[in-house]
Image: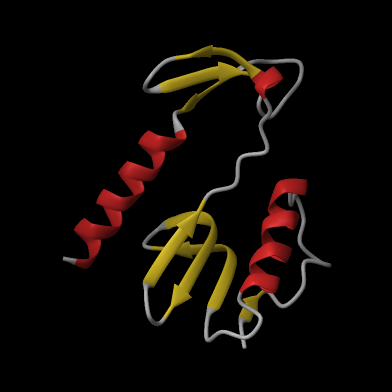
Length: 112
């Protein structure tokens, strides 16, 4: 059976609708499997939306982006500009692909 940490999202502040959907999806997906799913936990000095421990596969980090096409104003290979977090002020954010590659390198460097 999957262990969800926290066991419910009732007392979690600032959770996005997308994170709620992913939490429920992971809970249902791994209901009969030996797995641990952590929401918003610190690992190696950084936070991820979800970290999963699957004994047969290892660790998996998931970052949830609640973005739609209308949020984007400018896109390039390294950064995106748009209204991702506030409607009144555009943000410049790292391309999630670059973010994932950096996270992978950081974890690998920390382990080895």
